[in-house]
Image 1: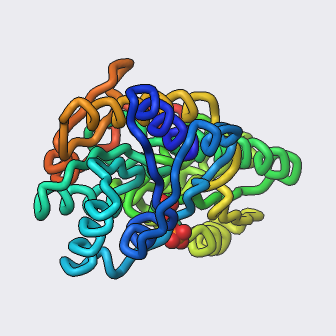
Image 2: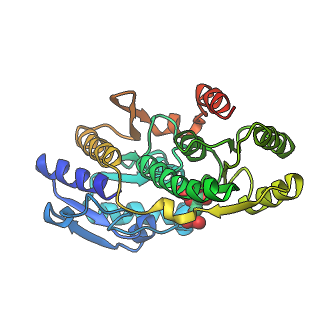
Length: 305
Ligand code: F6P
């Protein structure tokens, strides 16, 4: 998010605008936590995870009264447009400002879950996946040396994009996703068959929305008698220095959002499809479900044989 913020600020300044930021997201907007953003204020942050503006979940912004107050603050401060960087909730808030008050907004997709339609990638996903894969690689050393089954839980409350991507890259033997029905009995059968062929260790990736690693671990242990362990990667996936892919993505999306807003476009979310930058109405983005790639599912199955 810091790289995106840097891009928004510098692209807008470059076109002769002044830029302010609001601390703590919508909550800070309601409380007028405004600060001036200069080129210098976004210097030295491209390699930092999170956001220097900090963030908050705002209950008040979910009410019409809260949003009214937010628009008041924006107008009183002479703000002519708002760029919102975030996931589903943040983008829904932006759409409401656009629809209820005709306030000029532009969304930038930022979510490690990568569950936002209208873009192939959300900012943070690549970094989270790479963090998960390096953790899987480390765990595999113990799995192999001790001949164990490891169940590794990754983030993904409602979807399995991180699990599938990290499971593929981490060479997992099974990947459990909320979107795809699975049978633990079948997984145990697969583990026994693999063991009969000489395979002594396995890695199973679980999206947190599909099951809890501890429960899967217990089931496998009881049903197969294998030596099993589980690991929950948790919030370490949401931090750390972003990959270069994420940095460049964030710069491209942030600059595009600022430029489109300044050029008079409203109520959109910028994104990337293939190698091209795109921009879609927020109403389309938020009413469309991003689907798991079926080719990746087949690939994961073939690779797990
Ligand atoms: O950003 C989405 C997400 O990473 C989910 O995958 C995860 O369940 C959730 O955030 C965790 O949120 P919190 O920090 O509020 O526990």
